[in-house]
Structures are given as structure tokens and as C-alpha cells.
Length: 554
Image 1 (cartoon, rainbow, N blue to C red):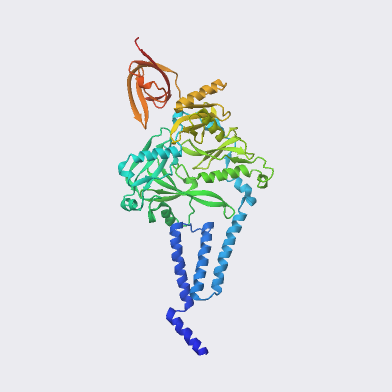
Image 2: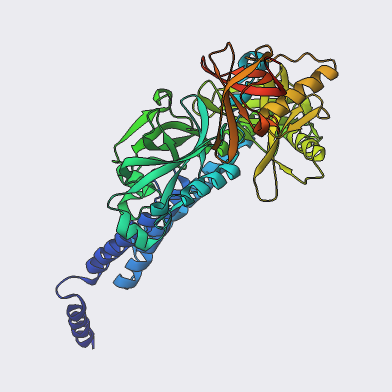
């Protein structure tokens, strides 16, 4: 009987595996199948091959279990290797969960609190000079998206092949706030017919003038989120830098308008898996794919966004929450602060700062101060200015025009007339900006609105004076009066502007139709009286103007 069984086993093995033993064949097949499945998974998931990545460790555990299961089936046995294949994932998973627990704020509250080095003695008035209305960004992301889509629709040869991404990152370009975004392939067929040349343009929106442009490129962008296979920017980065842990990539342009992808690189600074922080960035030329890694202190200055908003807000929350330890946040809550629900961006010194208010955990409708965080360097400042929180200011501005039912955008913090002030736009149901508002931080009942920024600013300064507060204005000359010698008009982005010169003055003056509805009636020979804001040596922008229809000689 034993001889018969031995003969059957020998012939059965030869039929299945030839001269190879079933255990060896099963192990090899399991390894090959596991590797192939992992490569397919990695192609789509782009998990960093880094032992500091909890995500990678969990994926590694899964594929070890998969290999163990395959080997057990193919080898028809569960031996010592199978037992080790069960034990290793169990240890790794336990390591991740235990590591995350012991990296939490319960054990490291002080380390989390110190991740954001906040200057608590910062001087708001020194850091924020009195704002010039010509530098105030009036376009939020939603409005920029509408302007960009409208401009894209005007380019007939593009609109049928491409669509606009909704990224619209805020950057500073040549010391002015802009929002920029890429275009993308409309669908698979459009990618197939256009990917060889790449994406031919990107879109920029001037946040001050509301001017939108489709910037055509001499050579198309070969690397983008909408490209497929190995020119997809995230996959391209993973293949070139398989071990780096990346935050979401940002689209930016350098000072010459060359498009780049900025990929922040992070690591954990608290315990094993806590205190995520940026340690550097990879820059990828969107046109030719050239890339370079920079440590965080060596990142080129033209880059504006290295730290994501979510990351700096989380660190700001930790800074305000753990000043007096972890358990203080649960019980007495002494000195505990938290960011308000919203945030916005402020352009200062050719950098982009995240701005948000800070309030007490009691949840009242007032701020105890404000924070500005540089998104390139993480330089952080706290201004101990108490006043209304942002949503109260938004409600106050909406109440000023309640008959029109306009909705306020989330405000930005500016120094208007030497006073901390919320500036915001008021939009109609279609999302179009119709008016602008200035709201005092210290007294949100002081609110001024206008159809132009200069008009709202002028009304706001008058309100401040009426309330016994001195308003400091910048770059505003005394009133000028004179007879018009030359006059022309032009429509720019749907707004009519009047260009004129006055007798005895070589400067060209510009007045928007929003400044005075009587401007279409103005003609050569009329005497005008106006004040203006200096923009350059040859061109001025009118803040207010009055027209005297008598001739200069009469």
C-alpha cells in the first residue's frame, strides 16, 4: 500500500511541476504574482516606499499576507514560512498603531505646540503699511474661476480641446497678487490627439484689476495632472523620487512666467508618526520635466506656496491649544485659543501669507487676535488686536446692502487709514462682484460700501473721521482742478475707463465709470476737480472727480 501511494505522489508531482518540487514552484509563483500585483497597485496609488510612511507599512503588510496566502495554496502546505508571513504583518500593524498612539499630543503636547514659531510681539502697523486701494485683491477663487472660464471661452481653438482646471493657486507675480491655473485635456480622445505637443497655455487672473489672460506658451506643458501614464505629474514624481513623501503639488510660475510644479516633501518630527512638517520641495519644469530637490531653507524665493493651508492651520491650532499642556485643553482651558472657521490670503513683501483670526474656545463672536503665516518660510506672526470675528463683519457688510441680497466673500485683513480693517467683496446670485466693503475690526458697525474700491475706501475714511478717528491715507495728492485738453475712453474687462489730460499738467489721468456716473457726459473744455492715487510718474488713477460743465474761459 505504501509503495502504491509513493508511486501516485511521485507521478502527480511530475505532472504538475515537472522535475521541480511543488514547494519551490509555489514560492516562486507567489513571489511573481505578488510583485506584479504590487506594481499595478503602486501605479495607481503612488504610495511612497518609505518606512516612515504608515500608509506604506500597511500596504506592505497586506502584500505580505497576500504572498503568504498564495504560497499556502500553491504549495498546499502551511509551514514555518507561512507562520512568519502571518507574524510579520501583525507586528508591523501593531507597530503602526502603537507608534501613532505614542506620537500623539497626549505624550508630546509641548513638541506639537512649538512646531509653529509664532512671533507674539509682532507690530501690525509696522508689518502692514497703510494699504493703497490699487493693491487690494478684489478677486477670490470663485470669481477668478469665473473670469478664467470666460476668457477660455473666447479662445475658439482651445475651448473644443481643453478645459480649465479649478486649482487657481494664489501667488505673487512681479509683486502683484495673481491666481494661476493650468488647462487640461477634455477627455481621453483629446489627450490622444494633443498630448504630443502638450498643454499650450495656462490662465492667470490679476486679483487687483480682474484682468484674466490665457498665456500661450512657445512649447506646451508635457507634465500635468491631466496627462496619463508616465507624464502625469504625480506619477512622474513618484518614479523619480520613490522614497519621498509628497504633499499635494502646486502650480506656480516663476518671475519670467515659466510654469512649474512645486511638490512639497514632508517628514514626521514628533515621535514615529506625528508632527508632520515640510523638509523640502521638488521643483518640476512643467514643459520639459527637469526637476530638482531643495531643502526647505534653500527653496527659490519666487516660490510662494510650500506649506499647505491645512498643514499650517493644524500647527496654528496646536500652538493655541497646547500652551499649557494637553490636559489643560480638556479641563480648565486656560489661555486656549483656536483659529476661526475661515481663512484667506494676504500678499506682503512678494510673499503669500495665510491670514485667519484667533478666538477663545468659549465660542463668542469676537477675535482676540490675528495670525499671519508665510506659506513659503512658515514665518508666523500674532497680532493681539481684539475685535469682531470675520463672519460678524460679513453679516454687517451684507446688512448694508440687504435690499440687494448680495453675499460677502471671506474678508482679508488690511491696514486702511491706520486702522485694522476687513476688506471684502459683495457678490450677486450669479457670483459676480458688484460692490466692495470696508469694515472696522474694532467696531464692525463702521462699514462702508461702494461700487468701486476707491469709492468704498473714501466713504470708509469719512466714517472713521465722523467717529472721531484719524484716517491716514497713502499716496493721495491734494485736489487738482483744470480744464480738460484731451479725452478718450476704452472698455477693459467690461468696465469703461476715461483717459484725459488737464491744462498745465503732463500726466495722463484715468477714471473708472464707477467713480462718477456723469463721466460719459464729460468733454474737452470741461473743468474738472479730482483727487488721485499715484501709480507712476505719468499715469494717475482717480479716486473722486467732480465735473463743472462751464468752459474754462467762461
